[in-house]
Amino acid sequence: MSRSALVSIATAVPPNVFLQNDVLTAAWDIFGSRFPEFGTLSSLFANTGIVKRHGVKPFDWYLEPRGWPERTAAFLEGAEALFIDAARKALSDAHLAAADIDTVVTVTSTGIATPSLEARVARVMGFRPDVTRVPVFGLGCAGGVSGLSIAARLAEARPGSNVLLVAVELCSLAVRHDELTKANVVAISLFGDGAAAVILRAGDGGATRIDHTGEYLWPDTLGIMGWNVDPEGFGVIFQRTIPNFVTENLNPALTQILAGMGLTMADIDRFICHPGGAKVIQALETALALGQGTLDHERQVIADFGNMSSPTVLFVLEQARAKGLPARSLLTALGPGFTASCVSLAHAA
Image 1 (cartoon, rainbow, N blue to C red):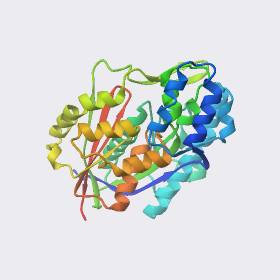
Image 2 (cartoon, helix red, strand yellow; image 1 turned 45 degrees about the horizontal axis):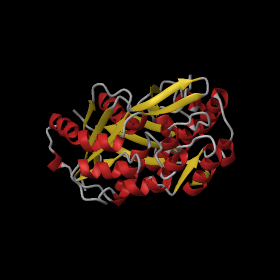
Image 3 (cartoon, rainbow, N blue to C red; image 1 turned 45 degrees about the vertical axis):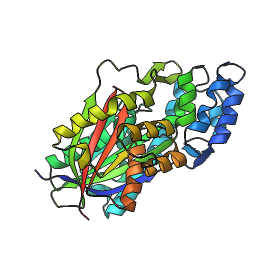
Image 4 (cartoon, helix red, strand yellow; image 1 turned 120 degrees about the vertical axis):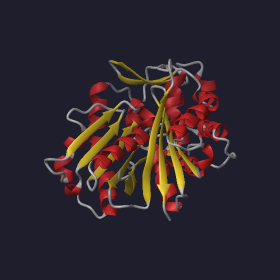
């Protein structure tokens, strides 16, 4: 079988920049007098590793309670703009036009759009009428890796065709004023907005190939991460301590995934991970038996952009690719399910 190869990768963020200290000050104003535990939980903001983040709306927009209609309108406007920005950059880097794209895979979990985003931007982008559309919803933070896996298989099914993956998330729109919970404070301390686009093609070589893909779904873990849906909008679910779960469970799961690829941990020259936050990065280094500080691109991305859910690992991949990939890398991300998703990259210098 002709393996898919990475043709280009690009990222995009909205123009509004939020400094972590300013977010903490605003959170104190909103929650400090209503949520007795906020004083203790406020230390989370300093422990995330985040310096700044980006949002689709100006800072003051988030200071007022918002419901479904306003959140959905903001999602459609912001997600379409980020989709176009990231996709056009990826097309430019690949020296392609939108009319050259045969399949579009759109990954998101932070808003609902029907028709889906790639249909909404098709005219502006210039996609052909016969382009194949594959919208994917609900993969959360694992969506960047799982989406890459899906896009790679679609490219391999039609060698020579161009497959565009766009992962776009507007996590900031899930800010809730009504939820006086630790999970909501964690979300406010972590999440930002962004998009990433990747173009794949099979059949004509390429320096970086998608060699293998794999997933592991832990049983009885539905409550670890996800959304509650109510009249106000999405509300984040974090019911277990994710860093502890990573430390205790990730290594055997990845060992099993790699065995299915005919690989072992020792075969991996570089792990490229979704950085959920500073403590998750530390847990990843422990679970993968890496020296503390090894996941340097992950720390830089979380510092500059926060946790953007699905596109975040693709931001890390973009940085790692720019610095030069080793012979074999493993992309990993964890998401609702609770699921580990992996893609093995083989790179020829």
